[in-house]
Amino acid sequence: MNRRTIIRTLAAIPLAAIVARAAAQSGPAKGVNVEELQKNWKSFLPEGADVPSSDQPMALTKDEWRKRLAPEAFQVLRQEGTERAGTSPLNREKREGVFVCAGCGLPLFTSAMKYESGTGWPSFFTAIPGAFKTSRDFKLILPRTEYHCARCGGHHGHVFDDGPQPTGQRWCNNGVALKFVPKSDKT
Ligand SMILES: [Zn+2]
Image (cartoon, rainbow, N blue to C red; front, side, top):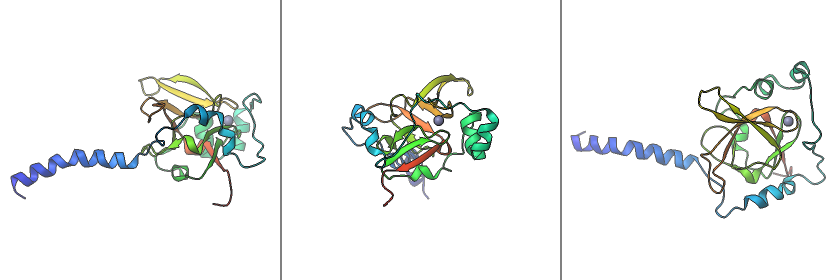
């Protein structure tokens, strides 16, 4: 490799990295109407589905939660843990449907709110209105906005402001804290 080739190769690396990350990301379709998505979230449920609402609070003791949840879900929902990036099968979930809380079944996001962030966690650019409450979290020194289920208080993830347009939000959710309900079981 001569000097010129080396310089050219080095110059190409950062660009290659940027291109790789961009290829891993895919935002919502252009012109998506967020208000409409939030209003029509029920159209993503299977016909006749019976889902709880946040005005039916669910309060269990830590021991009751431990018995009810799988250990990984307990760790995230009740102990504010974080699953390892890239481990959730929901990263690849692309069917139409609704993501509900793995703790209490409250609908949180629709498939139309999901996008590929390239982070290895299921990511959404908005949420169903009233699904979450937020708090400030100082665990990594810099403050982050933690969010939790409005019905059972289970921890789900953090919301960042580096998401795609039109909201600019990235709701970074632990897959293990979610359950996916497909609109149709045909696909
Ligand atoms: Zn919940």
